[in-house]
Each structure stands twice: as C-alpha cells, then as structure tokens.
Amino acid sequence: MTMGSQLEASLQHDMDLIRAAVTEMAGQCERALRGTLDAIIHGDQHAAYLVILRDGRIDDLEQQLDRLALEFLVRQQPAGSHLRFAFAALKISTELERIGDHAEGVARRALKLHEIHPHLHAEPFAEMGEAAIAMLQSGVRAFLDADAELARTTMAAERTIDKMRQRIDKTLMMRQAAGELGLEAYALLSTMSRRLERVADEVRNMCAETLYMCTGDFAKHNAPEAFRILFVDQHNHCRSQMAEAVATTFAHPRLLFSSAGLDPRPIDPRLAEFLSEKGLDITGHQRPKSLDQIPNLEVYHAVVAFDTDVYSSLRFRRTPTVVFDWHVEDPSVVPGTLADARPAYEQALAAIRSHLQVLVEAIVRQD
Image (cartoon, rainbow, N blue to C red; front, side, top):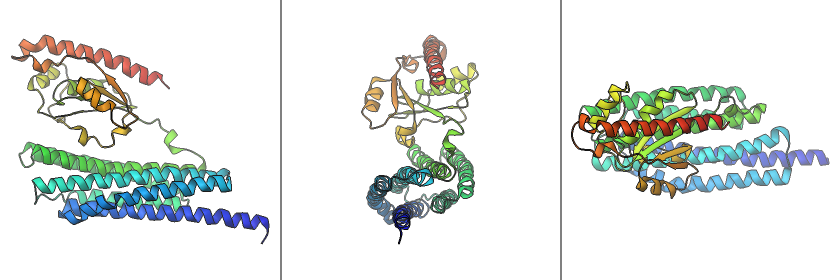
C-alpha cells in the first residue's frame, strides 16, 4: 500500500468513526423524542422517566463525538471539504445535544401534567412529534450522505412544524379560555409545543451545517438571524406586556419580542383598556407566561428586567444573554379606575417607548 493510499484509508477510517458517532447520538435523540410522545399522548409515565434517565447518555455521546472530531482535526490536518466535515460534525453534536434537552424538558412536563390531570392526554401533539422525528431522520441522513438537496428539503419542513405549533397553541388558548384547562395545565402544554417546535429549529441548523459542508456556502448567513428580546417583570401582567405590545409596532424584520414573569398573574384589565386606546390590542392573543414557558432562554440575545428581583435572578443564570435593567414604575399598583391611574400608565408607556427606541436603534446599527 502506498503512502497516499494509507493516508486516504486513515482519513476515511476517522470519518467513519465520526459518522458512526453521529448515527448513535441521533438514534438516542430519536428514542428520547418517541418516549416523550408516549408520555404526552398516552400518559406513559414509565416512558417519561426513561427519557430523563437516559439524557445523560446523550450528553456523554456529545463529548465522545466532539473528541473524535477534534482528534480528526489534529491527526489528519484536513483541508477543503474534509475540514468542513469536521466543523459540521462539531456543530451537529451541539444541535443533537439540545434536541435531547428538549425531549427531557417535555418528559418532565408530561410527568407534571399527569400529576394535575392524570387523564388529560394530548393527542394533537402526535402529528407534530412525528413530523419532528421525520425531520431529524432526514437531517441526519443528509449529513451522513453529504446530500445537499436533502438538506435543503429538510430545512423547508421547519415551516410546516411551525404551523402545527401555532394550531396547537391556538387550540390550547381556546380550551383554557373555555375553562377546560387550568392555567398550570395550559402552561405545561404550551411549553411542550414550543419545545417540540425547537427540535425542528435545531434540525434546521444541522442542515445548514450540512450545506456548508457540501457547498462551502453557510446557509445561516444567507438571511440575518433574528434578534430576540424578552421582557420580564414579576407577574407578566402589566409592564412586560406593555413593552411587548409597543415593541411589535417597530415591525423590524430582524426583531422578535416576547414577555414573561417570575410569577404570572392575569393581565391588568386597565392595561388592556389603556393599550386599546393607543391602538394596541392585547386581549386576543397575549397571556401571562412564566420563564419556564420560554424554552432555551439562551437563544434570546437580550432580556429586559423591570424589577430588581428579576434582574438579580437573570444575572445569575448560566446564559450568554445580555440582561438590561429598566427602571419603570409599575402603574398597576396605583388604585382606582383607569382614569385615576392614567398618569401612571402614560408615564410608564413614555418610558418604555424611550428605552425601546434607543435599544432598537443600537441593535440595528451594531451590524
């Protein structure tokens, strides 16, 4: 065997080890997702516990895959497509680990749901879950076969899963409004749908890495990533809701906004009336959310805290998210009718608009 053929054989051997590790890790993720579906749809607590217990195996496989990819870089000193293969494997390792985290998060909430509603199973999640699993299978196959066209097709499936989540969330809101679901059950189910939708996001990222590996074009850079901002206060019933409502009026294609609270409570009715006068209607779609209903806080680029307790809590979280502390007095604490509290609401609105204008301008200019 010539020196060149020996080097080629060594290269292919190392790449096969990486592919095998990706296959094993993806298989564990798929098993976890199927376990979560059994827990959600059939109320299978045994399946939920298994998903949680096995999550450590996915973490171990991530470390193993990372080690193989790094050893490949050091030993083979690859270039061109082989170098992109190693980088793609490292990125895909991270995305698969996150998928495992999403599955574990859903399983934990399924157990909690069983405690408060033992017979409340969520059959509408079946279609969405199966679609996410099929997308994962295709995404992994695209990487293993270096199939750019399959990667593109798989990425497009994300939009379908997004629509499924929107339908599920709409149904959940209607059931909660009709009294069929308590606030806690609604929060758990809503978070489950968001977690499953995030699986599709991770697979899309995997496919972007595969396209980069195959073509050298980084699909993530074709369209600027959205800049996500989360507004948080104590109860998500006044200031954070006001900030989210005002923020949506900026209508910038790269900016996405949401809100949450440490201890969610019903929206201040005077706020809804006040914002309605300003042409901002929040009565039909905004509901108080907890931080637990915001999956993957780390994907938010900035969090705005309106309370000292919130600011302190977020500052100690292990996340790269930037936290801002905005001092805005809470108008909901002013007693009386809206007429009595109007000056406080006007003052809060003016302060939030002022802060937002400066922040949005800074975000847009940072590029």
